[in-house]
Image (cartoon, rainbow, N blue to C red; front, side, top):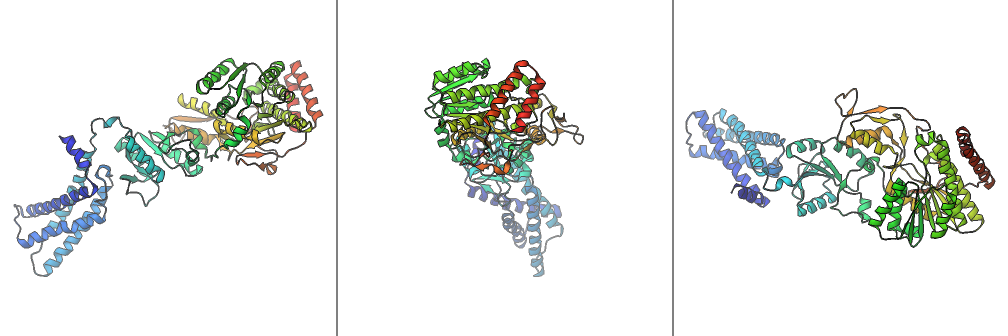
Length: 622
């Protein structure tokens, strides 16, 4: 019976709810002033006609004052504790106005009012009006049967996207919307689509008092920098944080307005995204036989997934790691219906590489096979040089010999002014590809060779993000090399899209540079990841924090800051805003040919110091 009554009251139109409140306030204040007289006179007060008129004037004056203070705009179910202050102010003003009316009446020679009556009226009025409001709120907020299973959420952003999201959720009924959070002061304290708008500094109070479990950021058009500033503030609360996709993704049709996703570490980078040009992707992939070396690695596997969706004629998966090859082959066979050729082998096996290219009539090669972990390659110089340099030579030469139309090398920012064996070996790989491009251009074969250089990709094998996640899960410490160390970052998916598009923009022998945005300080990334996990950083000033961040110093071969350009001012734009073309320079074919022979001989001899010296000597000179 009680549940039905509560449901009926909640379902009343807004007009009737306000009318009930006004009638209640009038009757309650009239009763309060009668009680005040009775207490003052120490008897059950029976007023005269003039006294009754003065008594009725009190609530008649109070009702417009309450309306002016917004007491009838507030939604009882969502009434904040600070509403007591509004009631206090409104009751004080209403009492003063009533006292003024009584004073004027007394001046006309009519009956006055004992001086203690206004004070009693004011005190009891504050208690009755505020008490009745919060009692009604408690009654209306009692959960209905089945309601406990619905997560209670806050929507950050009361704009058009937030309103659409709220409407979709209300129709679906899977979540209960507690309110909007918005930084616009003009909206705060008002209702938008029947939902109360609160300021950002009340989030903690709402979470505690309303049992909020999720906050959904519904501001798809805000700048990356603004988004980056909001996430850490939300992450300090012990709730799930989700977000609407960016306006770019919504416009591209990747998501619907009612689709939300978990906050990802990508969101903390402050990068603006540019939609991929489907024409560039299809130009390279559609209807062609494509081979990806290193197909089971981080970049390689993402490339294969992207390529599989772009309708190639055939996809050759070349991978040296048996389990990695099994995994990506199984995933693609489950998700996509296209011919797949899994090849288990090393890119250093020249005969195997040439046979695979020739037998499958490969049109396009994405060469992602490489040893990329700086410190491991630093400790394994010969293997690193053999795989990264001679392996690239093997694939590029076979591609040139067998008429492969497009060859794309995945390179790294560590190839610029290299300080590590890995970086130097990738610079050699760039030079090999440029040499093949020049030879194809001189021979007028129509083949296009290019390299795509970019920084770190989030979540790739050996990157700091999975390491930080693992360290946070174990309770820390999170290890950072240097407090000033910076790196360029982008998501794996974005990198894969840009790599394929760069292949379509190649004119032969190009080195493309992916626009990586501003470098990210590793220490800041670590701090944000700790906060995103809902934990506090342990410091001298905060010894009770959850996770400590430890500085361990730069390791051998590591730079403090990475570079993308040899000559930044000479890079030119392409039709894709995120892809730049480095200045082309002629390479002496005899130099690279002589260098490769010498390197192969030193690798054969097994002298790490000589291999290391030659790697840096040649890389720096070219």
